Length: 262
Image 1 (cartoon, rainbow, N blue to C red):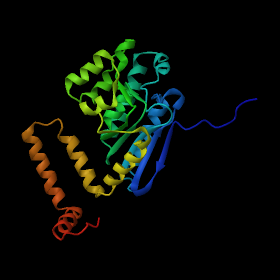
Image 2: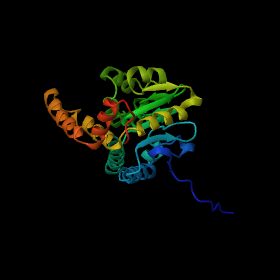
Image 3: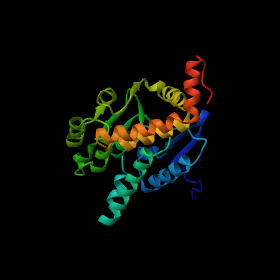
């Protein structure tokens, strides 16, 4: 008898309280490997959420035993030629850029392993909370496939020598090491991961969203600039910010020693 049950969606989307949205990679049997279908779904979902005025903070999580084990290696081996391979890696890059350019803060909620493109996914989020048993690696070199695209995000998160040690050896690092080198913000007990992530998301969601959107975009834009240009550009951003209603209310509330009303 044929199994007529509908296939599970590869991505789960949950709208939670206070404008917090959680997108959850849902290929637990494949350790949430980034198949083409998952990447395309993630890309379109990010575009939809970016246009939703109710969204304030995005959480990226995974189901099953792992956060994300990188690309689907069976799918990679089945690609017919270099053009197809380039198309898949370009799609992955578009997803990572969509996270970087997402108008609101993005938090990775990491458990289990985050390897190769999964480590890239963590590095592409603005913040990352890991449980104490989480593990991270860019192990492509061990199977003859250097983690070149994960290196883009990794080298923008951690110091060059730390990144190169991960890329050249493929060694796994624990959550505490990931925190020490700047890949994740904090490490919490496994049972507290979701609670801690939601607490951080709620704290950020309580801030004025227009100001966070302005600030995130400005920080991203200045990263590649020389120091003098960065100061000039960020000064213009702060001047624009100062004239926003949220800044007027925030400063007035501070001076009046009362909570702001945004």
